[in-house]
Image (cartoon, rainbow, N blue to C red; front, side, top):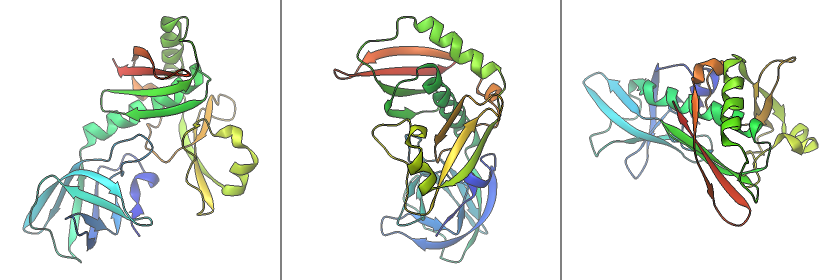
Length: 238
């Protein structure tokens, strides 16, 4: 099992680790990882591993069996042996942009309060697909509303609830296509705002900024029709 250090602190950029296994495809599994694995529309992190006498670039991270996180080297290379102590170094610039986009998408689901049917996150832009048959009437007004929320400098925090609590209040789940992972007894919720200023609360396993002002200004992109009942809304870091 890989300890997910990015869930304890999404701002950790360097950390020690120990190689616990190799995969048949040439991946590496560590006892603890600051690398977020691809999932929930968010790409896996990239970066670098260093050890005494060697180093290797990491192209991405993937989910393995159970709670394992697999680090995928950028190119075939000699791997450090199982048991080797390594230093993990995150491509922080890329990760931080993912955090900004991901948090902005949570707020996008606030200004467009429609069921979400899909989404994806990139380093410069992201998008959500909404179950709505007609496009928004005033894109500029939505962009202004989104940036107004960002400028409120709201705190972004997380908490854990039991599977039973989530099942008792399914309105927390905004995504129609994907249910949050359950079966381990608890689900992570991400809250934007505090008890007085809360604007959003939804299950999410991704990484986010600590306060909304850190997102920076967001610019709306295309709003596209994707099927009879779906509209795709893209946003960009300005």
